[in-house]
Length: 389
Image (cartoon, rainbow, N blue to C red; front, side, top):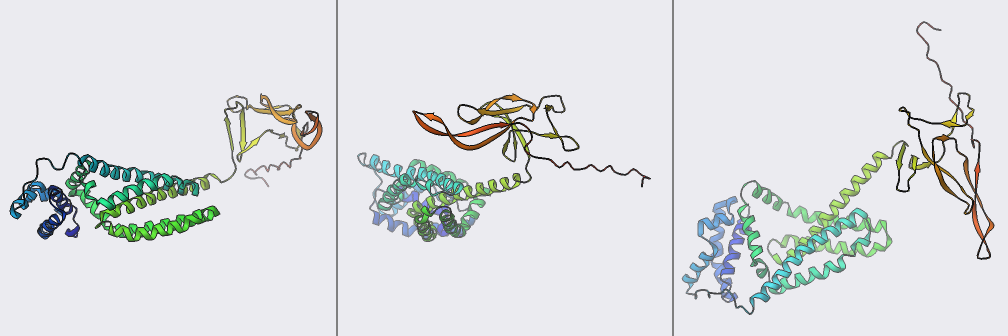
């Protein structure tokens, strides 16, 4: 692990910088340049245990360490109030807006990436019309004022302290392992963006502008991602892109699961029944409505006046349909278990109806009795008994 970029050393220096914030920036940078090698040597000595808590135990709190640096350099003691009351609320407000705009923007980008990938439609990119201005304003504030105002927020300090205390043990090992995968992650981000742009283009010609944008963002994240570990301002680029890629991967996984499920359930046709909101019991075969059932005897002769029951004596009742004489279309006329029903024949349109004095074409509907087809009944073969020839 490179202690130069150790999270514990970096967080300790950040708090020392905050404690010296009332001094001119040039002098603060000079002080930090003098103490940074010392802290890095301690981080190297501690190795993987170079957490913020370990450095505090070794050197004392960053605030007390900063006070010692003030005394050694002959700098004045810090004022009783850390900053002027007139300017501090404005500074906190801008930094807080930048921080939480990033948090909410990242969450919105994640959901947008999921929606785009799970539907493979560029229509779901429209939320960026709101997300991009929010993230852009947040990034502009950080680029102008630096990350330090955001890092100095009380909630950000608590988050750093919490993660600093957890950098040891299994959680710390997991975080360090994930950090080692960052180069591969940026390559994966670029590949996912390129692939998603191609899929959108294949699905809709209107997505022709999405592909070059995704390619440009992929190139940007390949440049900004590795540098974000050093320049924290670039987190306002790498984090939203990472969130979009995570959402896209989740959406593509959902697409894959749905495809596997449909392939698994699209085998041989099967019957299914159900009572729907409109009321009738309906029988489906291969997702098509079965309106009639025909029965034949062993000689292939159709049977009439057949009543069907299940093994428990329950009637196999389904919806019965007939012709509506007024409209020429079919309509449900009841439910029963009497088969076969008249065959509903939809013929050509006629001009026998009238609407406001003008001929109005309407479909013809006829109920035809009898069986509209013949059936070839397979002959059953009686298996030979032992000893028969």
